[in-house]
Amino acid sequence: MKTKKLNHKHFRYLTKQEFKDPLYATADFCRSVISLAGYRDEIQKIIRVSSTSPQGTKPRKYSNLLFFWKYLVKQIELLYVLAHRETEWTLHSETAYYELRTDHNRGWIYDETLYNGSYLNFDQLKLTEVKNIGIFIRKFFKFKSLRKWHKTMDTILETLFEEDSLSHLAHYADDQSKIFRYLEKLAEAIFLIYVTKAKEYIFKHHVEDFVLQKYLEKEQLHGSELHGSEELPVNKTNMQENPAPDETDDDL
Image (cartoon, rainbow, N blue to C red):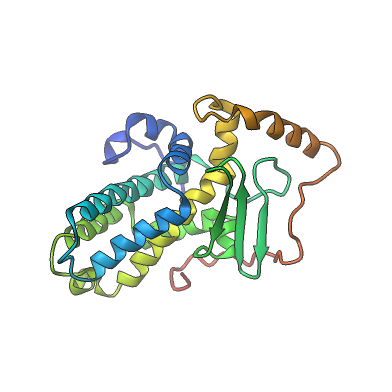
């Protein structure tokens, strides 16, 4: 995505600090709000209610739906900011902060510092997108601009309280499945950006904020080993060469 000057006033939910420091905001969500598996569940609930009648949904559940709907919009905005601030998305094998494991067309990363140890399974993202999340980011904003994503999320919010589902609206009928698939993949993209970009950033600049002091010595030791002759172990058996990125959304 071409670099251009961004203005905070164009974003609805990002605070000035989040706009200024999107990697910190990404880490804060992933480490403080919810796990990847839990976030997937909440997005699935939004999708189910938006796809069917909301009748019978309890007020408490509406509260949760609204809470995570707002986070989805905020993370679309974060993704847009990151797309214009970051230029390198390809994963590296020589790093102390993550180790990509693969199995056929699926990837996962274990983070021992996240919720006392978490496997981040990327089941929706294609392996080529995991290895280079910039491919997915380009597809995401080629499918809809930031302004159009705002309008789409507004419509989804309306369907949470009305009898009509997203598929009943002519403007979205053909795109409903793609919209929901993109939102499912967005959750994985945010956690992937956390573990491959934001984690290193907070270890270098915000250790105390995230109470990561006990891991710091281990990370530094691992990092010093990597600068020697030893390479971070990667499951190379199932690693495949990245094909040329297909930036159409026919292949979600």
